[in-house]
Structure formats: C-alpha cells, structure tokens
Length: 72
Image (tube, rainbow, N blue to C red; front, side):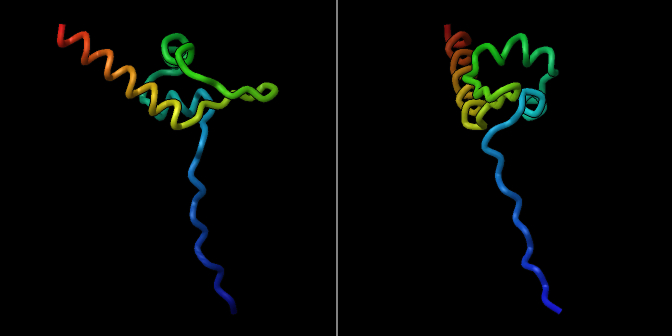
C-alpha cells in the first residue's frame, strides 16, 4: 500500500470582496462602502478579486494616515 504525501495548501493570492472583508474583520457593507473604492480590483466577467498584497498596502497606507493625523 502506498501512502500519498501530505498535500500542502496553496496560499491564496487574491480574495473575493466578501473574503477580504472577513480577512480585515469588517462587515461586508463597511468594506463595500469605505474600503473597496480605495483598492485596485481585478475584474474578469462577474468575478472581482482583490490581491492580498493590495489589502496589505491599504492597511499600511491607512495606518500611516492615522498616525500622521495623531501627530498633528
């Protein structure tokens, strides 16, 4: 009997908007109203995808803006 090697999960490169909202810990409606307009989105047919690195960039930019406002 041969044993199959364990399958490693493939890291996600992009998320659908609902998944991105969950990943950021915000509601779907907040994500669509406040965050999605600031993101670059890949569209193919009816599918919209947000790159994980784009979410990370958004977090970095948003955090920097908040810190700049606090310093004033």
